[in-house]
Image (cartoon, rainbow, N blue to C red; front, top):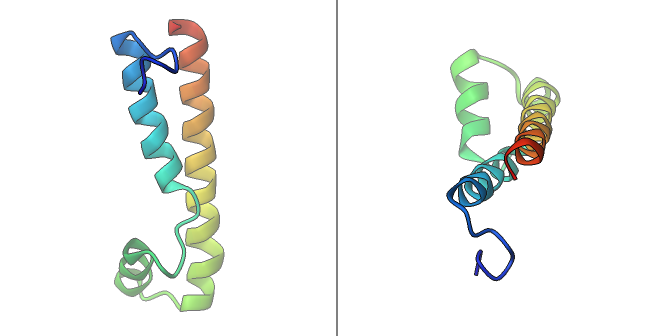
Length: 76
C-alpha cells in the first residue's frame, strides 16, 4: 500500500513508520494507561495530570511531526 502512495524508498518507509509513532503520542488522556502510570508514579492529582500530561504529549507529538516533516523535505 505504501508503494501505491509513493513511498517506495527505504527512507520514505522509515519516515512513514516514524509518523505513525508520532501520531500515536498525541494527546495521551485518561483512557491511556501511560497517563495513569505517570500520575500515580509522580503522586500527581488527576486534575493536574490532565493539564500537564495531556498538554505535554500534545507538544511532543506535534514537535515530532514537524521534525519528521523537515527531515522528509531534506531526504525526499
